[in-house]
Image (cartoon, rainbow, N blue to C red):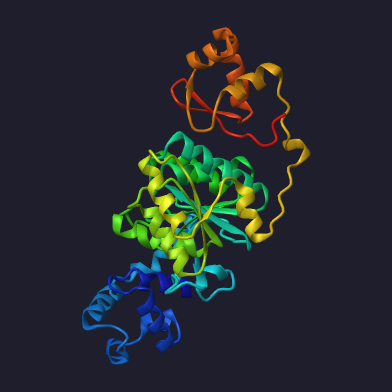
Length: 364
């Protein structure tokens, strides 16, 4: 029940993590803060007069506490308090860590967590790189952290899931809200496959722009390092990288085309000292994590499949017509081979009838 009182306090306008921590240190528990006399709250000088008035108003809403536990239980929403052993140790190390986290799924973090973030309007190249990195890192036992946004974030979560690995999505809204709406199936899959949807914002909180910097600090706070894949010079992903640097976490960046505005942020990070990475091994080597290609991961291709696969690239989509011209094969034959490669996860349709290859290592 203590966590419910903590949630009720956190939902009070004007009471952030620092003030909440001061109140609990002064009164001993969130329940004591909620139940103590108004005069004692004022006398503690933990809050301004305006904050006190907000708290007194909040405490009059008895259903705030009485109904929350039952409501969230029905929604399968759980709470993790700063004072619990299960609270992620990495997150405790950041400046003003969230006193309470809401989550759905299995919110446990191992010692190897890597965040992958980047542009929402990502190119096929960027999404391909993010998905491939996440897949290979997940195969090595790394938990993939990202923000469930369109583009790079979504590709990163998908890559981890495809590798049957664990991924955690950190939201800038309540965990009962699906944002963006098209990621509803992704959210369900993350939870169903042993991952978690996490937020420091109470259920019902809308995805407001002001919430996302706070979301970004949690993404970096949960991670040993942050990988930026495609980011403009002015980008929210760079905010995540700045949080990572300020907290002593590693920052990695994937280079891109000098002609693409989505490469500007990554190239700036590299100039400032971020490690340039080309594949998952560049990251794993930093943490001495061993990654060995399993025998079953080595993919045998027929000569026809190999021809089509080698014709495609990771960053320049080709149409069916392009592939037919380059391989000098029939339309029906190419369509069949593309379908087989898609089913094996080696080729991806990034636009109607336009394809890129997704995996190179381990193909024979």
